[in-house]
Image (cartoon, rainbow, N blue to C red; front, side):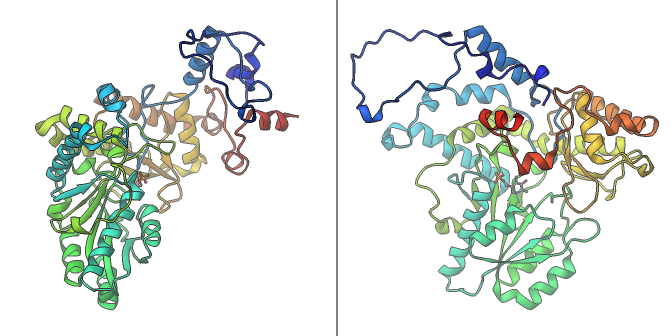
Length: 469
Ligand SMILES: *Cc1c(COP(=O)(O)O)cnc(C)c1O
């Protein structure tokens, strides 16, 4: 780590006795903390004046890349836009001070908001009822699959213990099915990235009586619309199974079509991905599950509480701030933005599946492979130009995957700026490949060893001191 650029750690700036605060006068009298609970010595906290603290953390934050500092073309992640009005609404004391154990009669307004969000999601998805208890997309998948399992059990159809999952699915799909005690049957993808219908017919012919459900993601992990859904839904329904829709990234569908109309029975939506809540670093999330009329009786018990309420608030604020007319543009704009970038770059970057995409698409590295410049190099060089890197080396279908997803709300100028830089890097790869291979040059630290960071994470100050000695 280049310490001179990073500045000191807050502990190194500490001076004994220095303070950046003063406590208010004690109005409550003295309460004696039992001896066995008292510290034997002072906590090892840093002692700094206010300006030192403010500058330290502000400088640290400037070393970080965020959606508020630049364009973020990360794929399989959907929203990289967090409207400030969402935060203002979520911070209103009437919402923020709610307590999960408050008497019900004191929270009727908060409950009414959940009902209104339920109505909005039903209108957008074509399903009949949502439960808001799941805390994330994966939790929603588990809740949805348990609902399906309960439904089959309620009919005494106990042999339905298999779930069909496409090989292109997000890793949480098979994981959720396994946690639910179901067996996974993988269906292959065609060269164009969509589900292989012939392979699916074979599976249903052989194991139809045991199929509980088929899970599908649409657009799929490659950003492609699964055009054969009506046939697939009929095949699965005819054999007695239900259709599950992974709606983690629903934005390219908003205003264009609805999972309920396509024949899906159960779905989850990632409110944090589709409706603009800041996410990343593990949370917070909300993965409400919607079902067709009648299936709501089979919702399992997954939590005594109402889920992540602040995420619901932000989602509802976003839906209302767009309104019925504007929300229809979300899907078409997400699709237009992704296709605009794809078409503007496909002469210099390798496009293995050359078709209209939805909200995202995948390049397989630079077109000119003779330069030796890899997807990793391109991603690192983008940092020098002030852009966050796209998702790289995922999906695993290609060797040099570079997955780009611009959300619907980016301006044409922003997209043009990104396209120009991607073209510039392709040019540099030809004229000065070393420049790209040794990037980044202008960031506080250079190329980190990703493997070492994962295998030997240094997470405490003490550990760093030990390592440096
Ligand atoms: C993100 C994602 C999930 C999982 O959602 P979490 O909230 O991270 O649990 C599931 N499926 C798809 C397609 C996703 O993109």
